[in-house]
Image (cartoon, rainbow, N blue to C red; front, top):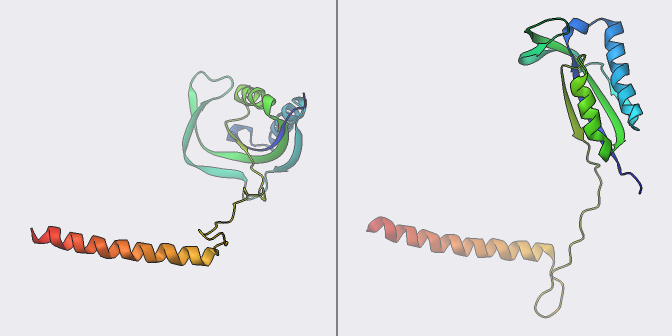
Length: 162
């Protein structure tokens, strides 16, 4: 049976204690290696502005290697990756990301391809068998709405008088 490959987008945050260029590149390499080991194909990696080092909207508390209590982080290093992977391997990738202490938080999303053909709609036919134009339909619906509004106004006036 053939595996179904989908496009994914992974955004992950590296904590600021690992902010040296070497540690950042090691973490990015470790995550990309996990993806390729699971049969994925990385199509793009982006950590240039607007990504890179950024402040958080709110502080994040997380455990750090060698420390007994959680530390409060107010900024991190953002990395965005696009890749293709078999759908049955995604759960294993998420497990590896959770176990990776160099990843503070991550968000893995499925990228929907644009340009997918919409479902075909059958043309509407009138009672005599001729096709009705879309403009005619819209005009008829608008006229019916006006008739309903006029009836509603009359009923409301009568209710207010009681």
